[in-house]
Image (tube, rainbow, N blue to C red; front, side, top):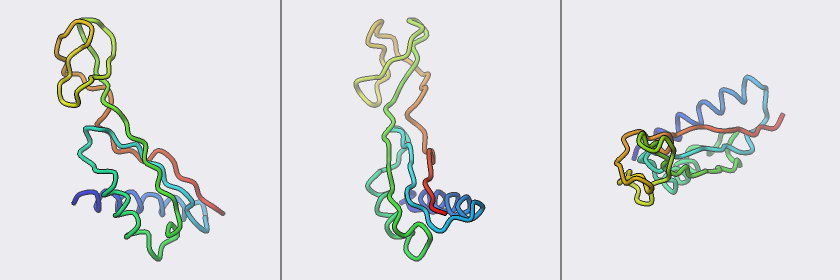
Length: 115
């Protein structure tokens, strides 16, 4: 379960930032998770509940934003959102695309702390 190690790293980054800012607690951690990242959001939530115990993030809220796959079509010179997750066919010209613009990310997008 790599979600546990992802959440551990995310929490470490959040706590280090909060300490630099002399925060008393972390109120919310927001993540962006791409559909192609291989991460299961419910597993992240479970890991978050377990690893935040006895930390300044113990009562924090985990907010996860799912990021859809977006591709770029070289033929049409436009971006598109494929209707099927693993078939990146342009809906306009039906060419296959190998240019994924978004959907692979795992990003700590924001952190809310209390001083």
